[in-house]
Length: 574
Image (cartoon, rainbow, N blue to C red; front, side, top):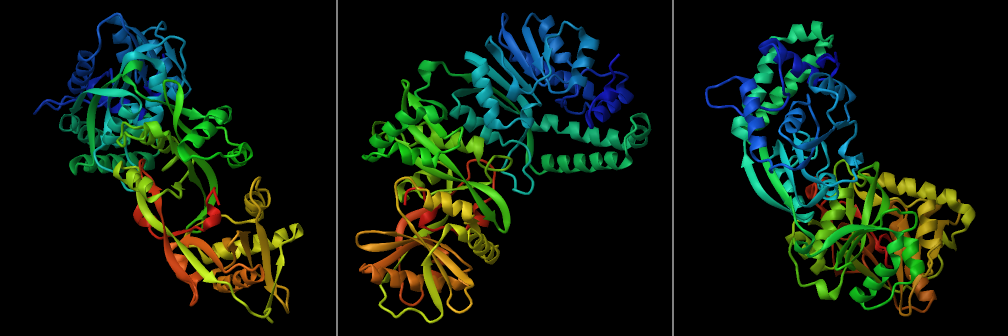
């Protein structure tokens, strides 16, 4: 007979204290307590009764995500429902089938990996939703449910945003907003926090009472038990101060005719329709070679929104290696954000721009996601819209620094030459010096691999890359990248410690004079503009704000405010 002692910690501990206090147990979930009634078994049954009171009538096909002891799944089958359970814990499956019969339909799978040929009418998440990424939960539920199918979430939630150092439980507002984004209507919402909170007090009391018994009976280290006691104390305090709560949500999937727009993921096979959308959105063509260069090697290009099977919005993302306050990380550069002109009228959370941006952020950006943070170069209007919709927070601004061309004799201290491919080790050395000097900033990696791909292998634009070195010792001073335009020289990038950058700017100005261009200019984040401007540069606004995606929990805007190092070369369009 499978024993609860085989459960993973702390489920084995919870099972043991229930067994010691009541002789047996049927559930491991939270109870809903009546006033002045401390019996947790009765409180757990009240929670189950509430769940069953909201079930649709039979016949009904139900998926229970996370089976616990299998009691709820067994009761669903006894009530006449066609019920299936999933859990990644094989011990729970053995326990459930030993106690409730081997005929119970249970699969040892996570929701993220589960698939079924038949659709479900209802999916139940009773204290399992908190362990699943919220966007993934709704995405999988949408695929598994019939139209008008339902979700019931009965679980602990965060009632307010948590700090980055302590991510906490899923936010109740995220369940509501993401449910709406994924095409679900909220049809029932209950706050059960005050009824559920005594569960924590019971666990704290029982684990403390049976502390020694848990060590000997379950062969658990005393440090593990004491850690559990501390964790429950912390959990209870979060209930007491209103950070955590317990909720019941019932949501209904909208029928296709109720969903104006449908969101999906864009891949390389969507190239033709996305280039067509680009032409409609911006009024000019993007060469296929340029598109392929940008998205080379990516499986998912971004979020795509359709109306009547036509692509009407896209929100793309390009991975970028960065140094995040001196630590290697991966950011994502948002690009090719476009909405068909005929669809731009809806500027709310029901509109295609929001649907694409939110879908992308929910999957990719924030704590525990593929990308720690995101950046981009939107127009002021686009950034303002994203801020109003709760997607963005502004953390900086891009400025233009321009200088008059400089007529001057060649320097006696440094010389400037075109960078050669065999000088790649110099690039890496200068990048390390730059990264070390900018440890308090977020700066995109500028090593040889990046330089080669970004500038030397660009499919449509020509750049010139120069190495400035000491005329006497030959030691490298820095590298600058320029693009020669009809009336100016644009400085795209610098690779050097900041103290050497005025020397590089001096050489860029001399280059402009030698090419008979009246001026040189650069884009750079506002806090660094004075460094480049010096005494001769003029600083003006580009009207390009720098946003931080804040839709999902991540690095707060306050930590990123004026902390980016970005130049024109960090864009995907210059």
